[in-house]
Amino acid sequence: MTCICIDTNLFLGLYGADEDPGEILADIWALRERLVFPDIIFDEFFRNRSKILDRFAEDLRRREIAEVLLPSVIQNNLNVATLQRAGEDYNRVLWTLYEDIQKVITDPAADPIARAFRGLTRDPAVRVFRWTEGLVARAHCRKLLGNPPKSPSTDTIGDEVIWETLLANLKEDLIFVTLDRTYHYHIAYLTEEYREKTGGALVITDRVSDPLKLIGREPSPALIRFESRDAKEAG
Image (cartoon, rainbow, N blue to C red; front, side, top):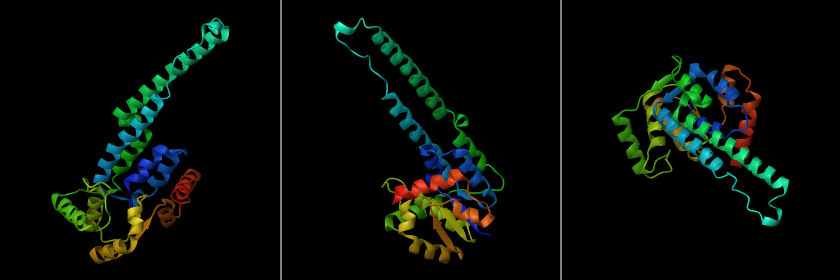
């Protein structure tokens, strides 16, 4: 049976989506009997979701309206008072929303994307592979040798650990879904290495709709729009 691994960046990308993430997560949920996850993906997701939501909150905070300073000649105009009240109402709602985002940051259960992601990773049909010190050592060696996939930071080896974990645990064909261009740039190298280490075939794609074809499920309209937007941004 062909396995499917969905990289962290696709789940994190849902936070900036204009489409309903619930529809997209439902598409992913339909794949659960074929899904495999190196557990470092969980760490990456929960660590980075907070950073994304915090950026949203800080951007909102910077949109606070300052008090409008007007010359005395028009300060008695009735519309000035109306304007000031409107600004105060706007700021009050803005700060309420800011606090709501802070609550979502501290409580993943209040975050629909995190809640669905956690449910997915705890589903008994989904296979989870644990990292080991041996896999980390191999990932570190891969980093030093410059072999793909390569994490963008010089201080982390997340992509390397994910890849070494998949190589160590799989013997089946694999569809790896990722928005990380590192995998796409080195597809020939990774495909050959995967065949040599596992005996299986590897497909790298940036579309969840590709593995959906395996189970005969049509992608939701939200997923189609989400993937079309990503394709335009990549182009």
